[in-house]
Length: 337
Image (cartoon, rainbow, N blue to C red; front, side, top):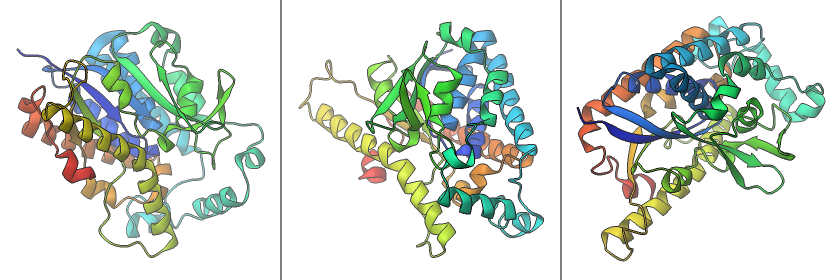
């Protein structure tokens, strides 16, 4: 049986990261695939760390159990919080929290007060979830899967990519630190915010730090929208999507440029690595989810997203497995230029 090696690039997106849970769950079923490395941001970074910890502990089945346990812990932690969809939310907008009084109040407060004022003790429920879900001491020495996890340096505005051997709970919290919700996370003396601002996810570590030529991008944030947003919530949602896709689009354009030069024999293919780009997405389903649903961690919603992710990965494998190692399965120029 031919084993094909791939690298994964996992976007962030709060609770929408459960979609990536489903993608990973399906890929773990595929014995013909081996994951060499993962680049992840925010929820993508957490999925990556849990995946790698499970793989290092006991292979595919343990990785699957680790991911199940992590998202179950996320949902349990959220049950005690006020951010829950109302019956009207579930009836009118599916999984969004737009009509939740707690969400509306929370949204207004975070626009007027910083997390340094709202949360002076700097409490973050995600820390406990991560410490229960990942053995960071074991992960430090794990080389079953290479990790490249991104965070944004607040002072310099540059992306920092934390690699295998450097991953701690603070690194994951830094990668997922939305500055309107949480105080900046300090790692090695430097303050960090969410990695999505500068790399969602960063692709360049997978080019320079791995052997595989195939990068599979698991898209959470939709690239396109059907119509011009007109309400405040719709505008904020679209701004969020554009902002958190911008760095990825820039990297895709650079990859397209270098690939064209290699194909035209204007660059030495022995000195420059040709990348095959693949894309797992469910734009139609994810496009209907508002930004408020990224804070909805009800288990029924997470399982709904997981099912969407499994289906998207299954469709991609059925249509494109044979192309892995041979060519890209998306037209980068058409999609990004």
